[in-house]
Amino acid sequence: MNILAVSDIHGRINYEKRILDALSSADIVVICGDITNFGGMKEAIIVLDTIREFNQNILAVPGNCDQHEVLDVLKNEHINLHGEIKEIKGLVFFGIGGSGFTPFNTPQEYSDEEIERILSNYKKQKGREIFVSHAPPINTKVDKTLMGMHVGSKHIRKFIEKNQPDLCLCGHIHEARGIDKIGTTIILNPGPFPKNYAVIEVADEINVKLYPD
Image (cartoon, rainbow, N blue to C red; front, side):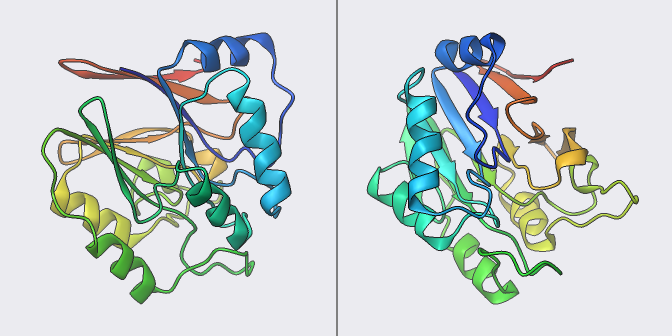
């Protein structure tokens, strides 16, 4: 399966040809949050409809900069992964959106207890497992700010260490675009879309490539 991983769209809908080609050629598009820039239902639908012009197969979690009604949109359109499990062609997807508390008081921030509750709903599945989170796990290459601080989630890291999904797709920290590993789990932050994205080929092995190089 060919997965296009994108994150931190922030309402941007003007895509150049290379982006349209990537959207069209993917089997599925996975959005790792911040679909809008503090927008709600209307703004989320505009972004999703724009992507759907080129690819009908979407899964997503909301980001901390999405209003809570964006989660309702994802649920109503049956593409939500926040606290939900979906299986597609033998791949098991599970996710968590938003983030922990930040200094910026953004719309979708969750307490430690809420994050732990959502993650505890997951039970180990058969088949390849892909964990989709807006926030990255702490102390990795993909959660490091320009100031050199690691600002990812300790709960997400704990979840990955315990469950060892095959792949974790995340975002949130724009400047921390990259690839890392926790145990056997590949951790991928594709960077802010549409300038950046990643293509994942899932076959006997999982191959990940960031674009642009």
